[in-house]
Structure formats: C-alpha cells, structure tokens
Length: 172
Ligand code: S3P
Image 1: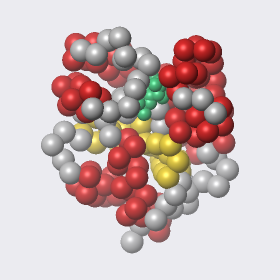
Image 2: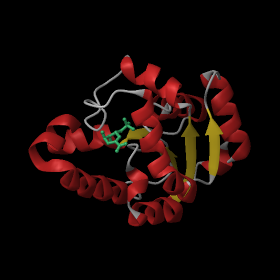
Image 3: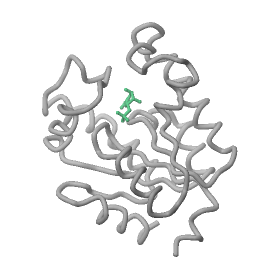
C-alpha cells in the first residue's frame, strides 16, 4: 500500500544514464501515479528536440525552460517527475524540488553509465565526449549538488527494476 506517498511529487534525479526514465515508468506502473518526464515535457512545449534547443538557443536557455517546467510540476502534485541530469545545477531547482516533494537520487558506476548511454538517446552534453573518463569527471563536478538535492540515494548497478523500485518505496 503506497497511498501515503501519493500526496506529493517524487522527483527522480541523477546523472544521465542512471535509469531515471526507466525507473520512473516502473514506479508509475507499481504505484499508479502519473509519470512526467521533464525533457519530454519541454520538447512538447517547445515543439523541438532537446538537442535542437541546445544547438539553436544554447544551454542557458534550456536551463530556464527546465526551471519553468519544474515549477509547473507543482500544479497537480502527486506525480513521478523524471528530471534531466542537470536539474541539480541550480540552487533554485533544488529548492523547488525539496519544497514540492520528495527527491530520489539514482547512481551508477561511470562504466555502467557509459554502456547504457551508448545504446540510448542522444545527449548534447556527451555527444563529443563519450568516454568513461569524461563521464567520471562530470559526475565528480556535480557530486556535491546531487548529494545536496537527494533525500534518498540508490545505487542501480546490477539491480533489476523491481529491486530498485522496492528499495525506493521502502526508503522514501
Ligand atoms: C542533461 C541531461 C539530459 C538533458 C540534457 C542535459 C544534463 O537528461 O536534460 O541533455 O545536463 O545532465 P537525461 O539525464 O534524461 O539524459
């Protein structure tokens, strides 16, 4: 019975390739909570892909859209919100998430992330830097911010979706 968690948003955060989209969808299936993916939400609002937004308007512009989208998630709270990996880069975003709900950080080893990203969608920030070392460095640069934003932190390496969701529901 997960009725006591359904009053607030659950923000799924973590580096690219840690499984935010997959786990958000699985968690939505298990709890019956609606799932919103911030990147997809922005793409629909702008009618442009994330890569095109980065290319045409730059990262700064994308970050503004990201904060606006995050604020809009407070309308009809009670959703699972899958965030972009860079959502923790602004203090303002961390405040919005912590005030508006619970935050779950997913983590994975750089090599795991590398393997997952290789077979997945396109990421403007990694397109020209696809090495394990670069991923490692980028995670290190962001680590403090992920920790600051996270209420619960869950390592995903070698675990199934069901195991990860179970852990989240137990610890949230
Ligand atoms: C970003 C992560 C991406 C997307 C954008 C920037 C980041 O989301 O928002 O490319 O700065 O880490 P995913 O984590 O879903 O790939």
